[in-house]
Image 1 (cartoon, rainbow, N blue to C red):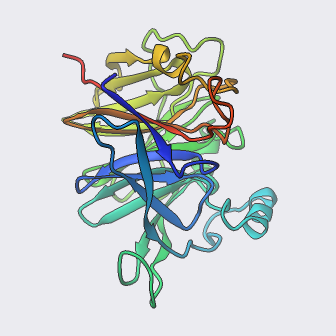
Image 2 (image 1 turned 180 degrees about the vertical axis):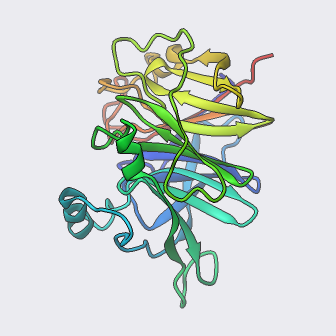
Length: 291
């Protein structure tokens, strides 16, 4: 590990996704449905402030796919929980947020980076995959569904979290989701928990997977998704200073990679640490690239 930072202002937000976009480290929180954030970590510091980057009006319920009664009830009862954002990615055209609640991507239209007058509005991309994913055996667990996203060229890759885990490759022009992949094992120990995948990143020709319950990041080949190597960080997340009080599942949910290293954010679900029970901040870690 090169650095770690407690995220000031993250209490109760549950930071759930990371991405480098035009040099900025952007983040989403699954407890807020109308904004995303940026982080500006500095070497030598122990904290990093969570700064609101963009505020927007979230889209309404999608009309072109089935919406369950439970999801519909959450939508009307809980404004900030209606999207359950779990991932963020970008390209030269804009930023895209992944809603686990609807297994759908949101992008933006309107004027300005933040709204002050005219509102920046979220809108659904046409791609949708709830029905095809369930027909292929995925998305069987509520709140264990679409958990990570990365855009590579004209394609999106979506992480399907667990029981079973897998990847959806949304090629340019694929609207309903037709290419699903099981994620080959990599000899990792998931410590009796479900095998899962909670974050994705693209860096220098490789697809990187965050395998939360194994405390691992793997670089995988685009040809067959086999792991070329994995790094493990359990000793960091479960160290006496950093371990959280509740550990039914491991905590890592966001992954972003650049030349400076492999960045992972822990979603602590509002829980304090063993060493500081009243400190409910999330943690950002920077790991070195393997030689």
